Every structure is written in C-alpha cells, then in structure tokens.
Image 1 (tube, one colour):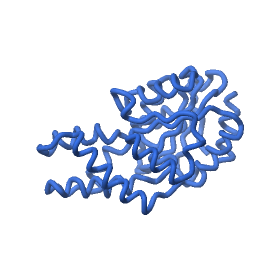
Image 2 (image 1 turned 120 degrees about the vertical axis):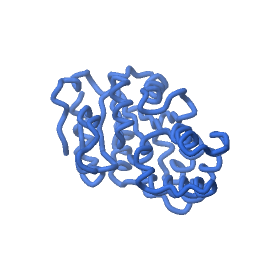
Image 3 (image 1 turned 90 degrees about the horizontal axis):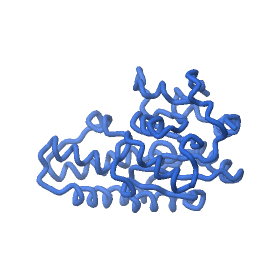
Image 4 (image 1 turned 90 degrees about the vertical axis):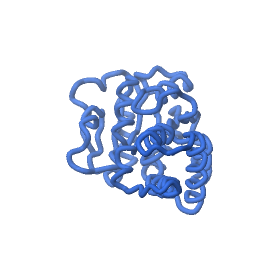
Length: 236
C-alpha cells in the first residue's frame, strides 16, 4: 500500500477530519478537462496536446488559463475563457464521468464512522456541484471549497486551510487525499498529513511525492479502500 513518511511528521495526534481532492481522486476527470481545453484553445488556432497539458495537472483552471493566455497571447479575458471552458466541460462530463469505486467506498466508510469530510478542489463551484450531484456524492460532504473561495490555488495551501477552518478542525488534525504534485505540496504547506495517489505515474515521480505521509506508488490501481480506512484509523 505504501509507506508512512519516516521523518516522524505523521506523529501529530488523531485524525479529526479528511479532505478529498476531486479530480483524479474521486473522479477520473482529466480526460474530460483535456478535451474541454483542447476545444477551447482550438477556437484560437492552438493545437493543445496531451504533452502540453501535463504541467497543468493539479492546478486550478483559472491559474492554468492565466498562464495559457500569457504564453500564447490570447486576446481574451481569463474569466471569459473560464466560462467557455466550463460550458465545454459540463457538456462532456454530463455524458461521461468515471467515479473511482475505491475512493467512493472510502468516502462512504469515513462518512459512516462520523469523520467530518470536506472537498477542496481547484474546479469551479458549478463544475463541482454537477459532478458530485451526478455521482451521488454531494450529501457525503460536510463542506465544499472551490477555487473561487480563495485567492491562491494549489500548490498554495489556501484551499486546504479554508477547508480546515470551515470544518472547525486544526490543520494538523486533517489528512488530505491528493493525486498531483501541486496538491501534495499544498497539503504539506498547510501542515496536514497527506495520502498521495499519483495520477501520472511516469518515473521518476515528482520529488514532492516523497513528502507524502502515505504514497500509493501504483496510483489508483493500488488503492484499497478498506486498507486505507484502517490506516487512517491507525493514525488515532
């Protein structure tokens, strides 16, 4: 399943709350995001490829588009591009969004055992609501924090700190599930424990993954909800 971080940073007392990322942790949304971004940028004559997408995985949509506008000199406001991208994305996601069975089961186990649960995602509130509602997961969360709720997205810790405040739990008592290097850095910067389930498995993994307190080195294929639930409980 992976190893706890040997540095001792995981000795922080009981886990009081669990924070989930959305994309790449609960749902396999990256193919849908890529297709929406490909369509959007094609409108401006840009051939957006999977290789070009990779550095942006784990970033908020707004921060990605800020960079793309600067990089390609697109003559459009970022908020206009973001709205258009969300329109494309919701059209695609309504037809096909894959929910990871093991993280769904883990979420249900944690909910049944009374853990406060938050979702902290760089997606927009509209996208989060559509995805969670369609997946039947919305009612399992006590709190949802989106990119619109904070000034800085991942790898800044703002999203996770906002989630802890909203749940009324100290950051050191939270554990985060993340799939991206940006997300792992954000969780560690927030002073939280982190379970890393890398979405991109290219060797070598980004060095930030070595800071995770539990690393599932084979990604989602290696995640077993019952074992992970017991590991989280063992932190108490």
